[in-house]
Image (cartoon, rainbow, N blue to C red; front, side, top):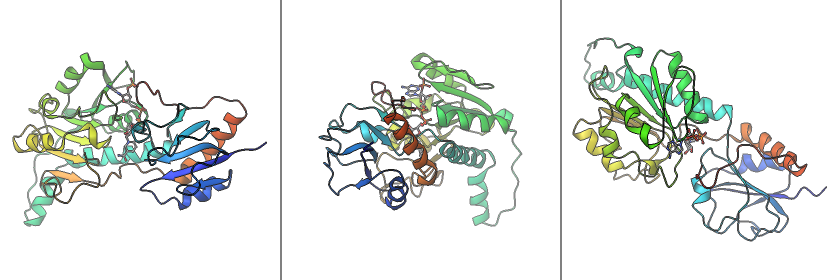
Length: 313
Ligand SMILES: NC(=O)c1ccc[n+]([C@@H]2O[C@H](COP(=O)([O-])OP(=O)(O)OC[C@H]3O[C@@H](n4cnc5c(N)ncnc54)[C@H](OP(=O)(O)O)[C@@H]3O)[C@@H](O)[C@H]2O)c1
């Protein structure tokens, strides 16, 4: 059977390993080479150029190499074929490591000790107990649930917020618009793991941060965003840090990426910056299941991990 070709377009990633691994199963067309090849049946993409996917008469599905698909849906010319996103244990493990690392750093006085070390100060603050701190995970999907479980195992109290009602053992869950304020009011450390959609863009703003619990064992509220940069308002975060609404923040994502050199977030003493690297898609873990899905779909089996285009994630 003619398997059809795979179009590969991964802006910002080195395509070499993706190309090599995909080529073990299918003939690969690497953008910008022959993009309108009519024998292309699947596309594997990250931030594809506008119009790249239009005019491919045999295209059956688009595979995002990341968990988020805002980069695909932002292009109005994308044809109406199913979109498959990444749901992978490896990605969830990496995100869980990032979340646990950042929560523990805020919990265990990381910024204070760094400042003390610079000045050679030997001083121990009173020890905190994890069970006195409530971490609120915004977005209880594949990544949010994995992070929530790890935090529970460390003894933190964990709240979760999602669009629909979710039940996760040990997690106090909240849902929808009505659940947002109670969720925030019960949260000391906010971990944002939402997708970027029309409903979530700009949600992490000053008004939302004001709802977090500030009189707590940490001595203030903490924000950790590893979802998407445009979920947040960078200026609102700075304002919240300046007036004490927020005590500290760990940010992996920003409204504009790379974060402009002029951004005050770079040198802010209460902000920990990473370059959108919380959980990077690894072709060695992701390509084999993608090829298996393409083969299964060609045999008539349904695709898994499909995006709900109306919901935008
Ligand atoms: N920084 C990085 O390196 C990195 C790496 C990978 C992914 N990410 C980001 O992480 C995001 C989450 O990934 P995932 O695999 O966990 O996604 P997912 O499984 O689709 O989960 C998304 C969660 O967000 C909730 N949600 C969506 N819209 C909402 C709304 N309007 N109100 C309340 N809750 C809403 C969903 O609610 P329901 O449960 O009701 O559907 C779900 O719980 C991705 O979209 C991506 O942007 C970042």
